[in-house]
Image (tube, rainbow, N blue to C red; front, side, top):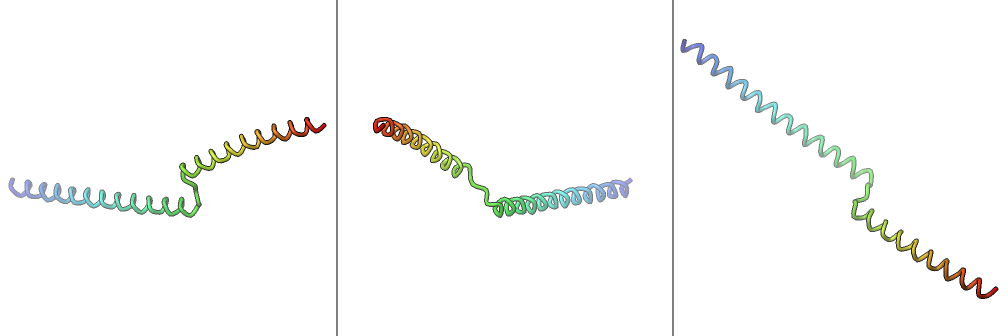
Length: 81
């Protein structure tokens, strides 16, 4: 009876080690995948959300200024006619 218990203990210990090794391999694969994706994104020259919002706001202000200038120009042209 004692040998069976030792046998099953050895099997259980081996399975625990295999599970630990598999978990380590999974974490390593995730790390490699994440770094590859980060490098790919960095190489594609994406802009940050903050940069996008800043340029979007600048464009909105420029459009408003253009509209105001157009109205002034139309008024000046009308007064000269």
